[in-house]
Image 1 (cartoon, helix red, strand yellow):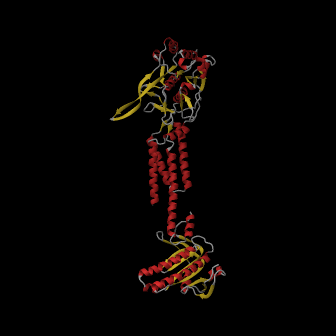
Image 2 (spheres, helix red, strand yellow):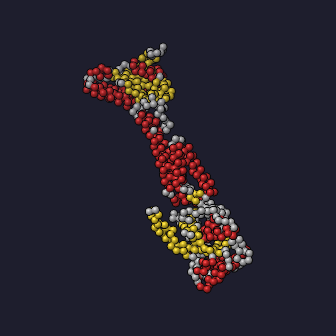
Length: 592
């Protein structure tokens, strides 16, 4: 009962921890790693989305980026929009905030004559303390300022902010703002313009409360078709190659400082223009990732862990392992299904909680086994030889339960002769002293020879050999135990004669044969003992033994013939038997 109570408490604790872990996003870094592995799978990049890269080749042609005039941008727009080859969108992931005078005019005119140009802006954020309903909270996305394209250009082109949001755990870009306080993102403006060209209507993606979404990346770095701006300007790539395409122009060189870590291909960096390309495709395909509600996610995990922990406590360890592994596998299959809906669930807490539940179930089972073993040891240690106790401790399958088995054993009975009149003549404490010393001698002799002390019966004792486990030469050991008792009795008798003026002796009977051996009694009180004719015969031998005599049966004699010195006594009758048994008295002498 106590074990079940502990298992229930542990199951509830694990369930609560699973809920709290999901709700408060414990192990967020590890969770992101798992989510990246499952959700950020590479798909098929849209071939209509093309990147014109400001790469090393372009920098070699036009010089350092900081020294550029606006002429290359104007030339690019003019070349791409020639005749009927115009792209759907030409988007510049480049901030053109400051005016540079007359050199800006060509770009302004090129944009004025085009309706497919999108420019970049930048939101400058600050943290502002806001109060709502008497509760104050920090808003880190308060817009202080918007850096837009320079003067006249901002009036004739559409533009959107290009800000990236980097995760605090590993600086990866997983999340993007689509709109904030009325301002639209760069990718949103591009997708909207492309939809207008196709007369496709508005997208179905709904941003969260902050105006953002989690990016469902289509591919890793360099997934989209990327062409050098230098090749386009020099006419090596015809304008027709960009017809009806969505063209994004942006940095694609290491020294331009516009690359970020992304969830796909962990450890790799992606240029900002490629990130925007992924967002644009996600918006056009109405794909985004939405975190499942943490409360419901936590409740579901908590209930699953509660059920799993309770079941694991009742089943075998290998079944518990399969249950934990199956739960983790089922979670993986569920994430693949939810991925189709763009729903992201916590990936780390269920495996951790199921693993903890499995470890607890294993630990509790081993603890219960150890406790059971201690109970067995406690039950046996007072009447079993130390070497037998040690053997029991090694038998992991030994169970202390009602029932027995048929075994061939040797049985020894010993009784103190003259104890009854002695107890009448002495004080009670003196009687107990004599009895304890004599029975201690008996116990030591039995344990020394590997026997099991079955029970004390007043001033008598019973021992069995070859139970509960097999013992070599157990019949001979039983006789040796009897002779050790006889040898020790002499000094005890002399001691008591000197102290009390009275003495005691012994009578011993040893028999061997088949008997039923085991735990006999009730569920709440049992004794390890042996029953049967073999036991009764041993008791009969002890009853017929004279003071200081060891009697053995013919069965014992046949096994030990030539190894011990005996004297034939003759046949004695057995109660309830028509035929008696031949009896021998063990004589003093060396044991072989």
